[in-house]
Length: 416
Ligand code: PMP
Image (tube, rainbow, N blue to C red; front, side):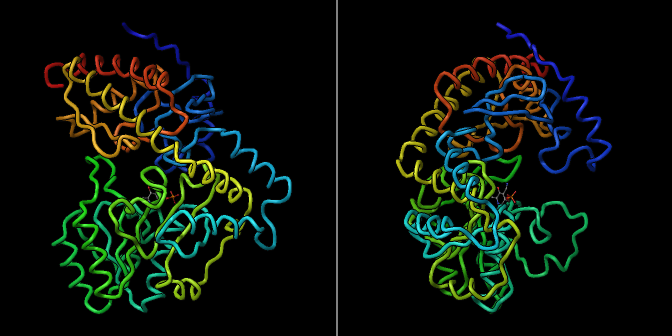
């Protein structure tokens, strides 16, 4: 049975028109709704738990969690109360608050590879700082990166080359995720100038199936860094705290020298962290590291509250349970609607792609129809579950996706 599309977009349209005059392109980056299918709002008004409300009052079950930061649910009362208590004291001062020491202690206590912590605001700050520390610690220049991996929007790593010079990338060498031979070739090419290898927690590049690292790949990266006295850097910005509290490679038994964190560590408050071990501590003390808001205390108080809740150990299993129900439900619906799909990655960070969909037209139709009926999915980026998703939310979302699959079948017919 169809579920009526009751959404209206008048306020959203009016804001888009105003934005076009004063914001380049009307909006920039991946949060430009013009890059998403019709049916997605550009502007959101408020959020609670796993629900979003746009500026027209339309409601959505949220499967993006702000592209990762919301791990306990929007507006989590304990996190918000901790942030408000700190805000009442002060946020941004001439010097950091005691929260910076408390949070560093908590992170070092939670994450086995970490002996120290430094803080920033965004994931790009953290990955860039990891690369800088690796170079400062080794006195070398070459950094190995997996082609297609996203590490942020700075000139050294942005996927968009407009405004970027060849010099910005001069000391990067590419390898292929999970391809040991390609890493070995890049290590050889770096010669005696290898500063480090940066790698995402798992392969979560846009528009392609997600891939977990093989244990052999992870171990080989560690061995190569040890043999060449280079730094192994894990970019845990996206996956951090959703797979394992001790860092995403902890279950593989492979510990990095440096790790980059942001997104989920403060449940939506702006914070990033670089964690490191003793091998790179001196390098970290040598670099110039500062930002006007990097010492602000409110987000650190929020991170302490978030991590305290996560350490109770319930959030990851809850996300896994809900993610599995969602994945199983989607698979059954795709089958019964005669639509061929692929699902990949950890269930709490799921990706759904359609077979024979080179231009993502099926994905666009599917997610557009779902958005119009109140499920905020993504056509080609991995999605995110939070600990606020309950089974009733997943079941309601599945009612919507069943209709969206039927629409795909209707439009693309037998080819679906
Ligand atoms: N690394 C990874 C793996 C990411 O997913 C992201 C953000 N999507 C970043 C780095 C950059 O983080 P930010 O957008 O906060 O700068």
